[in-house]
Image (cartoon, rainbow, N blue to C red; front, top):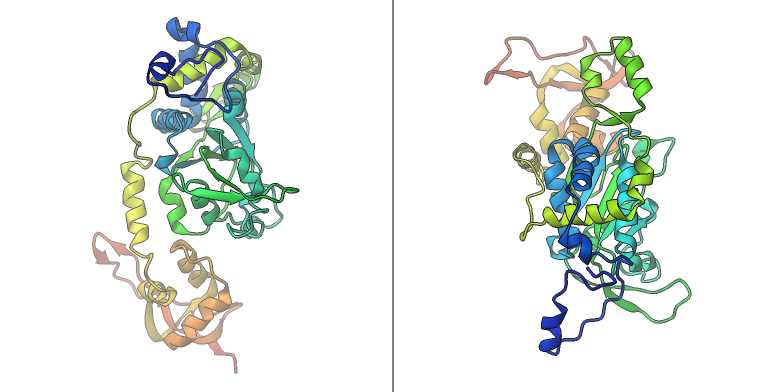
Length: 380
C-alpha cells in the first residue's frame, strides 16, 4: 500500500539499491504521523463495536483475512462470504472500508456472478468489469438481486475461482476498446448479503471464509421496549445498541486511519486457515459423497422392499440433503433403473418397491418396521 507520504515502504533503501517503484494508486492521506502515534481508543471501538458483533466467533479470523487481503496476498486464493440479518452492520463495514481504503477498495455487481450472466473466460469483452479488480485490494460483492423464485438464482463457482486464481494472468477488453488487456487480479473478494444462494461447484467453497452472523443493531428506545415486553433472552443476546453517530464517525480521517492500523495489527505472515475444526469435519463428511452417483446416494438412504412405497417428497429431500440439485425427472430415471415403479400413495405421488432406511440410534437400528404409506395403486 502507499500513502501520499509513502508510508509502509522503505523508500530510502529502495533508492540506495536503485530500485524504482511507482504506485498506480495511493491513499490521499498523510498516515505516517498517525502510525507513529496511533489512537488505541478508536482502534478498540472499531474492533469491539463493529467487527466483533458482526463476525462473532470469527472476528479475529475475519480481521486477519481482511488484513492479508489489504497487504496484497492474492496467492492465498481466498474469498469471503458473510450472511447476516437486516441492520446487522454490513453497510457500516462497507462505509468503513470505502472511506479508509479509497481506491484500494471497490464494489462489484453481483449479477456478474449469476450463472446465466457469467460468460466464462473466452469472451474478453464480457470480462471487462473485472479490470476494476486489478489494483484494488478489497472488493465487495453487492447484495444478490431479489427473485420471485429464490432457488432459481445460482452463483457461478467458476467465476469465484477465476477471480481468486492466485495470480493467473487474465484477459479482458474494454466495452469500446479494440486491444486485449492482460492483467492480474489483486483484489480479495467479500460477499455480504442477507442470504447466500447456492454456488455451483463444491470446490469453490473450499477457499471461502464463511461467516454466519445473527447480530442486529437497533435504537436504544426499541431495545428498551423489547425488554419491557419481556422479549426472550434467546433473541436479546444478539441485539446490540446502534450508535446514532456511527456513519459520521467512520467518515472521519481519525477513524479511517484507525481502521488501517487495526488491520495492520492483525496482519499475520502466512495464510490463515479459513475453516473451523467443526467446518472441516463437516466438509470432510460431505465430500465423502462427492464421487458418489445419484443412484448410489438413493440406495444408501432407502430399503428395497416390494411391499412398501416411498413418496416423491422423501426422495427429493434425500437428493437435496446430499447436494444433488436435480429435477424430479432426473431422480425418476434413477428409480426406474433401480427397479421401482411409479404409483399413487393416497393423494401423493411416489414409488413402489422401497421405503426410507430406518434411523440409526446409538449405532443400532431402531426396532421398528420401515416407514411406508399403505397400499399403492399402479399407474395402470
